[in-house]
Image (cartoon, rainbow, N blue to C red; front, top):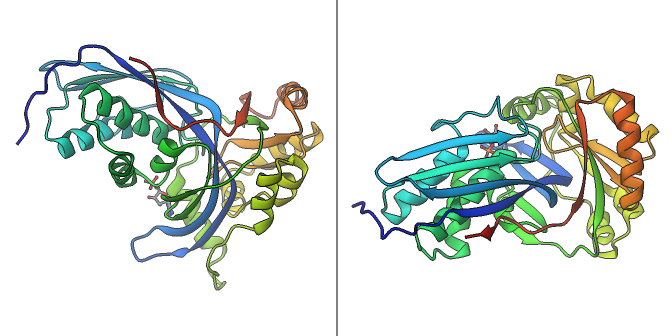
Length: 310
Ligand code: C5P
């Protein structure tokens, strides 16, 4: 049964971070079509702001502004819309909400932008409707929406197993400084996983396991050690689909980054810097190289989706 709730009239604004995978080790494809992962996520300071407000009797409406606003759907196919439907169904309420998203995370860029929006809607509706759902319940709903949604709730630095949705916090000392090269256009995640399957069709795929060196590097807070340990099994597949990414990675290296890799399924490329001023130098050099659409600096880890105003 669904019922209208007492009206919590104020808009709730949630800020949700994008992510980079510091290690992304991909196992074989499972019967359900998903791949077993062992991955280290880090939440970084590129954010989407998700404002949810009551829309009494009006159902769900969605508007998008900011980064990539013209290519993001504003109907029920958007994961944020589906998040509102899911949490409403779970709680037995009518999803009468306006959702307004201001995007700072690149769209279809391998940084979990859509997942961040879904995580933001779960947190915002939980508060707007006074549901008091536990973290555990929100995580359970998040995992039904997509593999990266639980991490966008969790934030920080975490090991992800299974589809990437079984999370354990990882100790990371201090902050790491990143430069992100944003590409023109996106890469659909399923195509990148399929390409990887094709590239290694004749190989036996071992159980995925992130290198121990990455955990040591994170706990020491040493960017040079982290640089030596970062890895992404999806990178070869992303480059096979987008050969232009090779020149982006080379430009980042030439700009002085201590490491560079494709972020998640791409096409965003992530470069590690020693500190903030080094990140700015790399950003300037990458911008003038002309190999990418635009460049952003960020740091991680940052918190997961959280209410910033109510
Ligand atoms: O879970 P999500 O909907 O974000 O995943 C998008 C697509 O990425 C899946 O449909 C699947 O093709 C691929 N994927 C995968 N293995 C994972 C996570 C995602 O193959 N562990």
